[in-house]
Length: 308
Image 1 (spheres, helix red, strand yellow):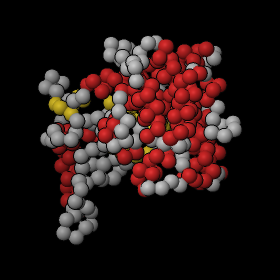
Image 2 (tube, rainbow, N blue to C red):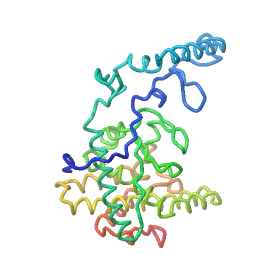
Image 3 (cartoon, one colour):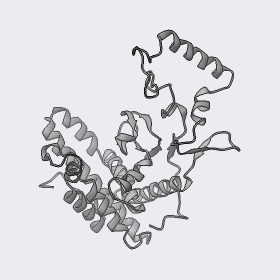
């Protein structure tokens, strides 16, 4: 994928290195405390007393009033595993892998160009989503998120959340490598934003409150496959720009295949439970992405009529 040198989106919220975002900070989010592994409150022999906790909090705010942020001092003391390096010029923290940031910004910009054009052709305006980059954990309007959550879209704040470590996991753990495979992940989550703007996601979220778990899973599959199809539409417009290189489409299709519900369940537990599927089988995910890619049309992505 020839992405370098192209426009980069400004709709990025980079929370990596933000002490209040979680990570190794001893002060958690949501009003609670998150202690390093091995600690605990009220545990025999290894916990912190309530008095000690109160003392630490008081000390923290005393230093804060003096202009010293202990959280940054603690986070800055470790260079292993954080993915960050100190900037002597700014005194802050900047991503160690600037190329990954540039890549995500570029892919997001390409989705903006695609969906702005499509919405304009329909006589509507496209509201561009924000993409939040985080490391290890963060908070969204949809609740707490960690790296284990994987990339996701929150309809409550219109933001896509991404821990870029997922790209490494996609390659090393799932065998789906390549920049267009990574771009597919971003485009899929943006596809959920498009669903939100079109009113599809709100209707689903309202309807599933009245559904059984099995029926909600079936409907979720249709929602996810449509996001795959929308990602395929983006891929089509990207191809028309001449950005795609040989093998790029195969990278995206391989990624779709590797993260199908049936493939993942076989890999993790050795058998499949179809009634628990909520993203679609490998065959379905590949087919719907390809349908969007081949057609480039929203009308081709109706996953709610007939069999999927």
